[in-house]
Length: 286
Image 1: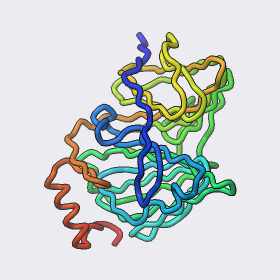
Image 2 (image 1 turned 90 degrees about the vertical axis):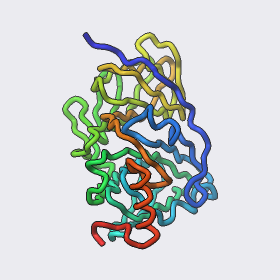
Image 3 (image 1 turned 45 degrees about the horizontal axis):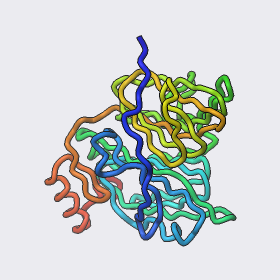
Image 4 (image 1 turned 180 degrees about the vertical axis):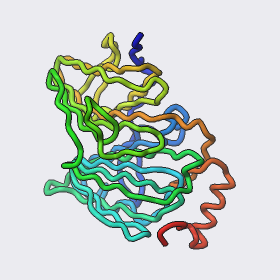
């Protein structure tokens, strides 16, 4: 018998400053991580004041994680220590596996109206994959399938499968889904989920209901984390809703986290930072 997921927790994103002075909203981070396994952090960096984002995220290291950046407005120029560089624009995605270690920078630019916006998700890697070779996957908007369902529901499939449409990001150890979902007014979409996977949504426009009984309407810039179940109800009243849905297989391992590096033990963290300061941090593609 199918079971609808119930809401476990609702979190309002909070203003935070990161990088060289980028003003953003954090949906969840360090203190909430145990609830969101395998995910570590989710940031919303939408804004229209260049002073609040133009200094960006200068050169910094990562090890032991994956970072997923999804753009809606403006662009982000990026480069790294192994010679990879490029620009992600509206609708594009960058899926970076830091693995054994990488140094990179991300420098945002606004559009002609000064708007810049997108989201960054950090996903953990299990111990067996923390020291794999780094890799980038830059995905253009045109490569991402959009599924049109009944009642006007539209789903952009970045990762995972919806109605036979497979997202361009595959072969990820935590078996994630990453969907951009739009539900028009007075409609319902029921999404199947893996019962054992962690599932959450982040509302980016409008407001919606996330239980079958329509108990609570939740709007923009809120995270909704769900209990277990094999399906999720997303419905609307008089207003439409647009949201990001993310899910993944929990890792269930100890976390040792300091800044941009996430390992399993404090000793592994010590080694990582020692290598960083000694200049021996990069293990692959030197």
